[in-house]
Structures are given as C-alpha cells and as structure tokens.
Length: 441
Image 1 (spheres, helix red, strand yellow):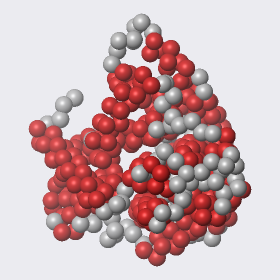
Image 2: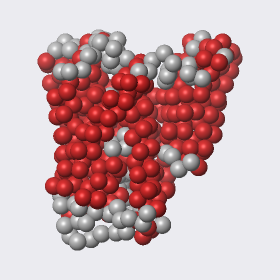
Image 3: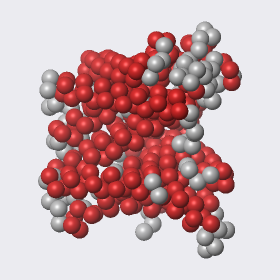
Image 4: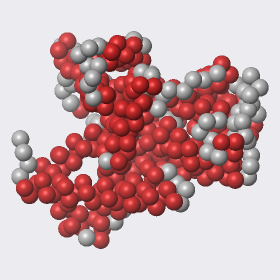
C-alpha cells in the first residue's frame, strides 16, 4: 500500500522539520554543556502546540494534525525510534566489573530502587489521581508508572555526561552504569506490567493471552503476564547470547550482512514480546543486552546500528516527544515542582543509603546519588509509553517529561562542577582502588 503524493509530501515535510529542528537545537544545547536529548525535545516543542501551534495554529495543524495518514506513518517512525533507542541502550552493556564494583552497584540498585518505590507507595494514598489518570482509568497502572518515574536512571544520558567530562573509564562511571542497567531492566519490566494492566482495562487483549483464552484484566491475565515476562527475560539474558554466537557461525548466515542480522534480531525479539503481551520496548532492550555480549567481531555492526539510530530515528523520536508537550494547556507548574522535589528527594536518599551501605565516603555517595538521579531517555520513554497506553493524562505526561529533563540537567551541572573544582568522583571501593576525576580527560 502506497501513500498518495499529498500524504507523502505531508509526511516528508513533517519528518524533515522535526529532524532538522531536533538536530539544530540539540547541537545548541550540546554547546551549552547540556545533554543533546534535551535539545532534541526542545526542538519538538518549538513545532508543537506551545510555540508553533500558538503563533501559527493553521500551519501547525496542516503539518502535524490534519493529514491523518501522514500522522499514522509518522507514528510508525516514532515507534521505530523508540525500539532502536532501547536496542542501542542494551548494546552499551559490555563492561566487566571488579568484585568491589559489583557489590557497590548491587547495593545502590537495591536501595536506589527499593526506597523510592516504598516511599512512592506510601505517598500514593495522599495523591488525588483524578487529574493524573489517562483514558485507561487504571489506578494500579498509574501507581506503577509513578513508582517507576521516581526510581529510574538514564543510561544514555549519564553515559554522554561521563564522556563529555572525560570520566567514562573511571570506577565511578562503571559503577553508575552497572547500577543504571540493573535498575532499568527491573523498572522496564514494571512498566511493561503497568501497560498490561492498562491494556486489560482499556482494550481487548491479544497475543498469547487471547490464544490461551485468558480474560483480559483478570488475575489469570496478570499471572500470565508476569510468567511470560520472567521467561522472556530469562531466555534473552541467559542462553540467547550463546545462541546468537552459534547462529552467526552457521554456514548459511556466516557471510550475511552483520548489521542486517542485528536489526533482524531486534525485530524478532520485539515481535515475540508483542505476542507474549509484553511491551515491545522491553523486548528491544533485552535484545540489545543479549547482542552486546557477542564479542568484538560484532562491534562494527553495532556501531553501524547505533550511528544510524542516533542520526535519524532516535532524534526524530525525541522531537515527537517534544511535539506532544503542551505547556499552555496541559501543564501544572505547582504540581510539577512538588513532584520534582519528591522524586529527587526519594531517589537521592535511596542511592545515598545504598552507597553508604557499600562503604562509600559522604562525598562519593553524594556524587553517586546525583548521577543516578538523571532520568533522561528512560524517563522520557516511560512518559511516552504511559501516555500511549492511556495510563497518564496529558498534564502528567508533560510533568514526567520535564522531570526527566530537569534531573538530567541537574546531574550534568553537578558533575561538571565537581570536575572543574578538581574533586574526585570515583568511589573508594572496598578493594582500595580509586580514580581522580580528571585522570582520563
């Protein structure tokens, strides 16, 4: 099925403007020392209802609202960008950690997730959900999303901050990234559960549950989802890397394009996740983690996938996140400030306690806490997935995106200040190893 010339023209114009705005504004933010993702979102905001829609509403409508078929095609690019973003995040998992680093990362993860989830659960009863619920009207799903929102950490954003500061190869960076990966796998699984709960209340279900005759939204559907998620992650994070290695050595595919094989693996894992009733972004993340362990001979293909993703679908995805933000009609500044203070407070507390439990000195524990408070891409993915699933309202979506942006900017500012003042950010591990901030600059 092909698009009409008018629809194709509208699609190309909208995608071109979004990508161009994301790249230009992203470059400006990068020069200002801020994460590129914030600029890419800001580029989308300029074309959304807040700026272009308010100044020239007929142009905004003609480009991004009226052409229905073009909007569907643009939505497909949006979903592709999300899957590639998650896949690339998973591909970053290849570091080897020493015993002290593993222990520190595990304890930071345990309390950095556990404390925020517990405190968010305790505060849930005092929150008026009427203005926060989306069309699915699922309070359990909403509470899960809020718990994930205050707990999540961004691997891509914090990696970029470390790279810009010249500390990516320090023990500090390795611990933060290890803990962030562990957190993200756990929290994305919770987000997939929230999407399943909302789907049971908002749609007719499908895939494996429909094939098994499980009633959507029932206790059996929840048990089926949890079992499918555990089995799916168990396979992809367990035997799947060895299977991929053997497959790549098979005569039938030995000479095949490695980049194409990686993308085929992404599509297969994401399709399997959809059939099992799991959010496809979790399948893409797990597929990336499995592929990241293939060895050095796959690095060229991985670089090709990452370079393509960061050049087109991922900036386009973040621009469309910004395009959906409406600061004039769907933003409550007072709620956002209270939410920001609570989210930062519980995440900083949990991570600091985890670092203290691992034997870190106060300054190192504080730096770890601030770094883990950056929500960046995962926080934005959380917001967009929750909005698409009908879990959150437009107003809460805007606050969730702004929470990710604000905490990422805060982490970048704090760590840059520590570097410029010549202070050590590397933890004093139990093994006695430490590294200075500027060692690899």
